[in-house]
Length: 257
Image (cartoon, helix red, strand yellow):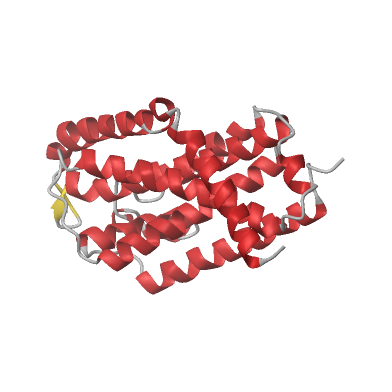
């Protein structure tokens, strides 16, 4: 395929993915916004005043970046895992595999679709959060780059889950038993400085902590972890997951029979 044909193929997959979640926005965009709004009300407005300041900021202001990132993570992941497994279940993926389309274009197309949904939900949640918090941007470059990288990482993770999934039940196991616990323990609602030394070290093994912490730095200018280290870790995870996803596509694991 020529570069122009590859670009057309990538755009086609991306448009398909965007239309897929935008047509049912009441199911894909609205629910995470409503859920996050409840977090704002319960944790920020009701519990926050009793907790006091966190890291030198109002508790509401402190948790807003983490809640935005949580919405981006879950929706980026959910979009790709459901879409890719749906393509397997309905045998749409076979049409791509028999075409001269390179596997890396397929991986990039599905990943871009996950990024599109993650960013859409993230922007919607950010707009809602303005009703609860006076958001101030400390570093726009850090803010934009880390949220895109995070969305990319979890879109790739969702694709890998979709490759391995053999039933619709399989696409909910990782989000329920892995993604949700790591997100809640990733510094969304607290600073790791509150934890004993041992649990601080344990928390450092949670990759979501680095993403949430760096995203919070983009808003508030405070960070428990060096920003450069966070970028290095997130970049390493993206490269690893991309190569693994591409390997699975090349060998046809769970796809070719």
